[in-house]
Length: 70
Image 1: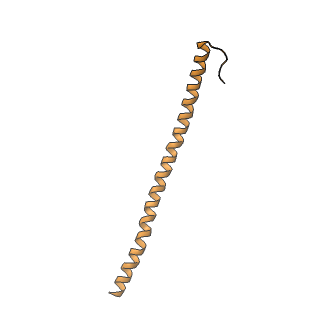
Image 2: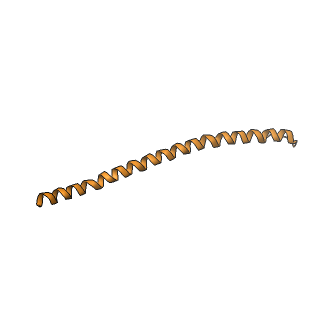
């Protein structure tokens, strides 16, 4: 809550407290953002692995058919 009055010492204390609160808020959200980035990186890796597996299955079937025909 903003202080009532026009004197600078009162306002300076208010400004310093608000800056401290903003710093805490920023640090907390920065940590959360880092965790989200790590989760996204893990999901991208899993998608890549499953993409390779999904692509390898038709290729393996094609080779098996080719081998059995030849």
